[in-house]
Amino acid sequence: MLAAVYLVSTLGQTYEALAVTNDVSRGSVITPSDLGVVELPITPSSLEPVRADQMDEYVGKVATADLKKGQLLTRSGTADELEPPAGQSVVGIALTPSQMPLQALRAGDSVRIVETPAAGGEPPAQAPFTIAATVVSPPTDTAVGDQKVVDVRVASSNAAALAARAATGRVALVLDSTGQG
Image (tube, rainbow, N blue to C red):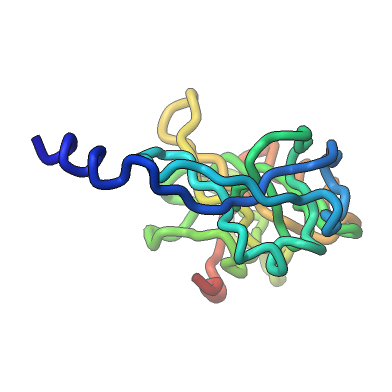
C-alpha cells in the first residue's frame, strides 16, 4: 500500500540528470560538450545518475570506463585520475590472516610490504627488504584456502621486485597509517 501511495505522489514528477552526449573513451578527460541534461521521472531505482546541478564537479574528470553517447553519467563512471597514475603500478598480493593486520584495510591506507624469512627460518640479521605501498582495494577472498588478495599501488620501479617476492608467499603487510574516508 505504501508503495502505491509513493508511486501516485511522484507520478509526473521529474528531475534533471547528466547524460553523455559524445562517446568518451576510458581515460579521456570529460569536457562540457560531452555532457547534456535530461529529464528523468522520479522513481525508486538503484541507478543513481549524477544530478544536472553537479555538472561543474564532473567536467575535467576522467572516464573510468568507455562512456557511450546517450547513457546516464554515474559517479562510478568518473574519477580524478585513473588507477594507477603514471609512474605507479598496481600489484595484487595474496596473504593469509597471519601476514596482515586484523584491522580492516581500506583504499588509501599507507602500508609496507616486508619480505619475511622462510617458514621456520631465522629472522634476518639486517633490516628486511620493504616496499612502501598504498592500498587500492581492500582484501578479497580467493579460491585458495584462507588467503585474501590485496591490491596495492607502488612506484613502477618497485613493481617487479614486489610481484616476485609476493609470488613466494614470503611477505607480510604492515599498516602504517589509515587513508581518508
